[in-house]
Amino acid sequence: MDYLEYYGLKEHPFSNIVDNRFYYNSSQHENALLKLKYAIDTRKGLAVVIGDIGSGKTTIARRLLEQLDEEKYEAALLVVIHSSVTSEWLFRKFAMQLGVTDVKGDKVELLSQIYKRLYEINKEGKRAVVMIDEVQMLNSKEIMEEFRGLLNMELPDGKMVNFILFGLPDFEDVLSLDEPLKQRVAIKIWLKAFSESDTRDYIHHRLDVAECEKEIFPEESIKLIYQYSHGLPRLINTICDNALLEGYLYKKNIIDDLTLKTVAVDLGLDNRGE
Image 1 (cartoon, helix red, strand yellow):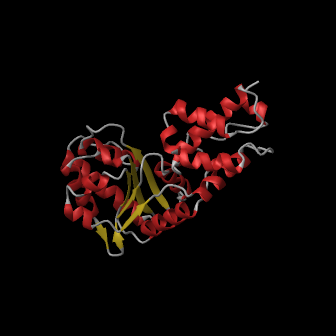
Image 2 (image 1 turned 45 degrees about the vertical axis):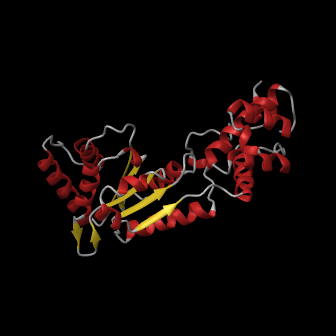
């Protein structure tokens, strides 16, 4: 037996793996998606989503990608995994994701290929969308200038490509490396942590998806989870997952304050509840 069977759950409700079945459509997430869709459909060119670690940026990126109909949009999602990325590497990734065949190594030829492919996409009546997650790692003035160059590719009704950049708050400093690019940001969205009410609804939503039929987290426990997590979805997941495991090990039918305080100490979050 594990905690799934003990609490009557069909699956783990608080995994931090992005799974759209567990997506919680908070008001700010809904508004963010509507704004991003507007930016794409009106060919604004550049939109930015900024938030702290664990605030749900990647979740929104994946959700948006899922919502973009392949018949109407040519969309790609790139995740920057290290800070030594060059503009040439980035452009090759753009080209491949947008469907360029026989990608060239020479930068001038590569830009020509990207331009031709973007023209084809727009001629087909589609919108080209490139989303980049963890973009604060592209801490390079050269790359910011290259983004600006791509945004100069226009049609009479707007930009040929829409960039949506997701990053931590220090991405503001990266944008400032190229002031003209910063001024081209058409839409900027700041993701905030959940309120206590959102935290409660978020926990209940994920438990419902996992087909939970019991009240495992009473009101007082949810208040404590909010205090320890500061409303950050990733931390809420981590706390709840650990609490369910702890509760199972000590055969508790509900997650009480003592269980949560034990988990908070183990995770180094105990000072958040003060």
